[in-house]
Image (tube, rainbow, N blue to C red):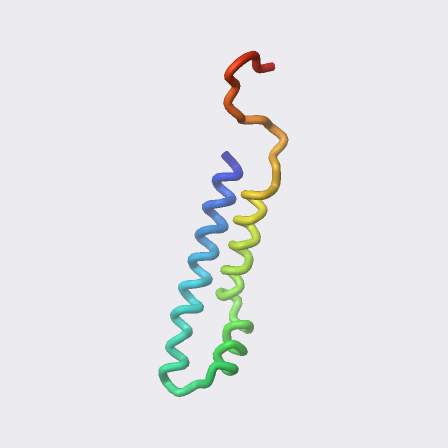
Length: 77
């Protein structure tokens, strides 16, 4: 249950971060160049949410838990 919570929490953070990255693409339409956009993105704290969320999602998927919740067809102990 905790792995599902951390996966959804990471997904929410990643979504929030990417929304801000896409919102800040409007800087390109008002005349700023791409290097200034990248410099602006790496300095904003809300854009780090996408990286943090991706790390949390990967950890929740790839770290093995200590309990075995597999399907038991024969004798389970």
